[in-house]
Image 1 (cartoon, rainbow, N blue to C red):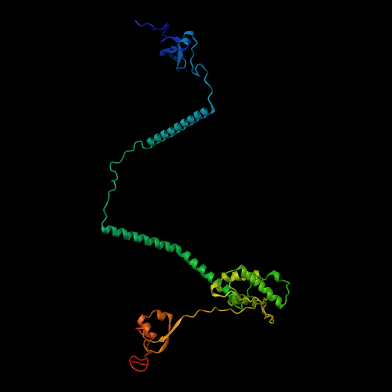
Image 2: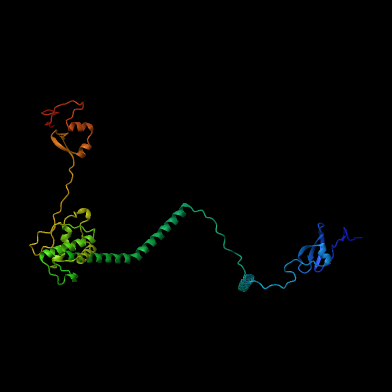
Length: 359
């Protein structure tokens, strides 16, 4: 029969109980016998020495053993509320699906499937005749769509043409009003700056030059030459206006550009046409501007060569292009050069090789 082991005068306490601890087994003998114990209250496992078990001082070492459960913290409470919400949502979805299933069962109650079903689509191999028919049908549909689109867009095109034609007519009338000396412009704008301004002829000329310079500075694309200035001068002259301002020039210039009146481009005109000195032609009362004559730049002359015609032998002048198109033999004959580098007299006189020979 089993008996309790004795270790050097100490009895083995395995299987006994101390307070709330059940002694499970011996786990160490030295330096002092130590036992594995299990708490009967919280079921936690720990170790206790032999001396504390004999004296009854051994207690459960778990921090929560025998304590009242603490209140849940905020984070744990939030997590629990979230789980409860998820459970309620799952339950709601399940209820909706169950109601939908019951409604479907009520709707299909007593329905019998047909004995014959639609056959499954099979792959069909098209012949060349079928392809041609399909292509023709597609072309017919495209032609019908094109005709329908043209019919639908026809009023828009006609209206656009009418608008463009009306715009061209309005621009032509505007050009006639601005350019025709016999037609007065009812929209001519009088600058209030000129009201009450009295100047001599010299002062008026200097005034016009200053206004024209300000206008030219504000419009770099405007070329100050005879043609452009004559267009502006004719407009003011037919309204008997001898003095103008920069604002008047700006308004008239914008109207002329809008209706398509052509002005000389910068590369077609010479910009240095206004004389730097004071104008001398100030005796005429209607003299608004003094324009210096435009200077044409000297064009370089193309190089020419003096030689003899290859057909008649008569002296003539060859251009650089004609010389460039000659072969070496033709060039030597035209310039009366000897092929071997020898000096020779030009061939003159009668005969088939002479200069004056004609067949």
